[in-house]
Image (cartoon, rainbow, N blue to C red; front, side, top):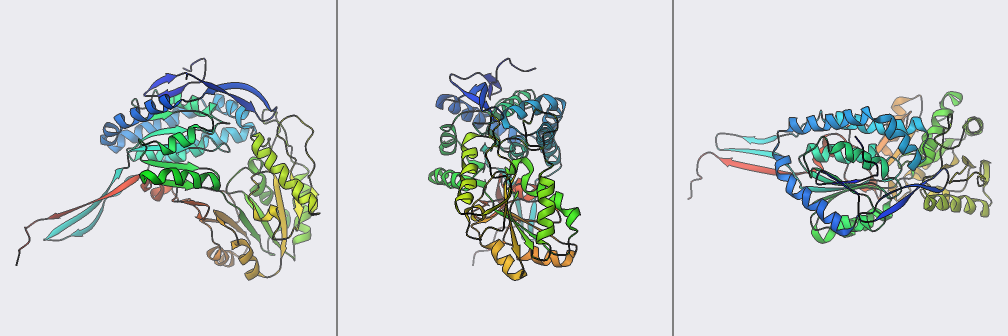
Length: 476
C-alpha cells in the first residue's frame, strides 16, 4: 500500500524528490524522519499535470467527482490509526486529538460530497432567459498550516475538487508526513494530476503562490504570511481565499453556572495547546463571578496533564515547532517583565521538546501584549469587566475578527451581544464548532473569503451567466 519512504504525488506517480529535509518530533526536539524538498522543476511538473488534467476532471458529472471524494474519505478512515500515530510524531498533539484531526478530514470529505453546485435562473420570460452557472476556476494551490494538518487540508481539497478544479496541495514544512501518506492513498482514487501533493521548506510556498500556472490560492495561516501570499497573487490577479489569525474574545456573563462552565472555558482556550486560530485568546469575565470562576478554571488547569502526545493520558502536547515555542516564551517573559500576576504556569518546562506549561494570567491591562497579540500557545489572560457596552467595545478593539464566544443562560441576551461582536463566527455557550455545511471566515485582518458550506464551495468557482433571447430584438 505505502512506499518505504515518504513520497510526493505528482501526476499520479510517487516522486521521492531530488532533495530532502528533516522532520522534528516536537516532544523531543529531535529529527525522526525526512520528507522530499520539492524543487522548482518538480513543482513545475505538478502544476503542468494539474493543468492537463483539469478539463477532463471538470467535465465529469458531479456525481462521479462526489464518488471520488467519498472513496478518499473511506481510505482515510480505513488507515486512520496509522495516520493518527504518524500525526502525533510530527505534530505533537495527543493521540485522541490526532485521531479527531484525521477522522475530521474524512468527515469533511464525505459531508462536502453532499453539496451541489447551484444553477440560478434570474429571468424566465417569453423574451429572454438568464441562467447563472458556476464553472471551476482551474488549478488551485492549497497551503495548509501545522496546527490541524488533515482537516484543514480537506477544507480545501473537498470543495476545490468537487467544483471541478485540480489541485496542488502543500502541507506545512513541519508537518508534511501524514499529508504525504494521504497523497499516496489519493493516487488510488483520483485520475492522474487531479490531486498533487508536494512538500518542501520555506522556499516552496512563495514558488507556489507566484506560479503562473496557478489560478487560485487557498491559504490558512498567520495574517503576516497571508499578506505576503496576497502580494504574490496580485501580479496575475489570482483568486484568493485567506483564513488568517485571530484574537478571539470570550464574554462570560454573571448568570453562568461557574462550576459547570469552567472546564468548557478552559478547553476553549487550551485545546491543541492553544494552537487554534479560533481558540479563546482573551477571556472577559463579569466582576460578579470573576473570583470564583477564576479559581475554578485554575483548579481544573492543575489537573490537566501536559506531555508527549504518544504517552497515554496526555491531554496537551508540546508547541509544534521551535519558532512558535520561542514566540510563546517571549510573551511569557514580557508578562513577567511587566509584573503581571500569574495564576498558574509561567516557568519554562524542564522536559525535552517544546513544552510550555498551562499559563493563566490574572487581569492584565488591556494594552498588554498578551491581550493585544495572538499568542497561539497555552497562555490565557483572564480579565474583569462590569459594563456590557464597554466590554463589547474591548472585544471589538482588535485588528482581528475571526471568532468570539458569549457564555450566558439568557439566550436572547447572548444573541443580542453576539450581533454586536465584529467577528465572522460567534458561538453561544460553546466554542470552535465548525460545520461543512456552514460558512466560516474572518472579518478585518482575519481573512478574505470563507470556507465551508455552499459559500465555501462557490469560492472555488467562477460565475458564468448566459442570456438567451428567444426572438431577435427589433431595431428601430
